[in-house]
Image 1 (cartoon, rainbow, N blue to C red):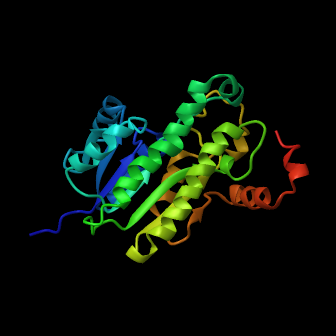
Image 2 (image 1 turned 90 degrees about the vertical axis):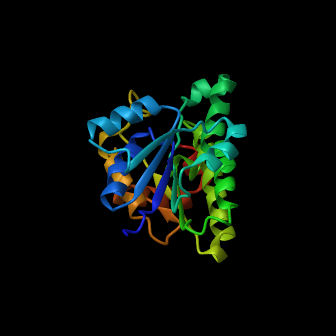
Image 3 (image 1 turned 60 degrees about the horizontal axis):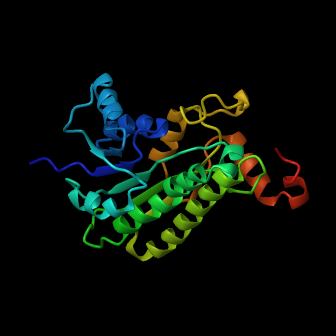
Length: 243
């Protein structure tokens, strides 16, 4: 009898990074549960890539529908060994300042929804298979900047939550990682005026997710590693001059 493949649960699986990660996990022998509101898009993705249902299960998940999260987790066909939280939503900062709904949705998707579902998953001590939780965050959450501080604040909160969750789960030997990414060429950033030399491909970020080791913070790309460390130590008077 062959051993059953470990399961990876990807939350927010219709993101470009998540869709790049799905085939990578399958190639490594995992079974993937792809959870998203956009199930039709995921079925099309699976068909286009010739991924069979025995390797990829597609389920409905809404990060902002908090009262459904317990039922969603209980309904999973298999308890996950690895969980990836990749849900994202972006509202332009100037719009977010005058549009509470947009601001609140970023908070719900990046922080509230993540805390809701990841708390449920982390507190299930009957799932002895669970060994890793990975969250996709952003360099926008490293320092507050006037061009994107509302979006950035939601990512900063998510990163801090994962930092605490990592410590909380340490004695259970469950690894928690955060991918602190720079600009990604994706549907979420389409139309934004971003420097081409700093753009990263979703596949590049997906490989960082797949290869996440024991370090908590993982910053893909050497340019972004430099930017990350500079942002952390930059004096406030210089941060204020950034766009």
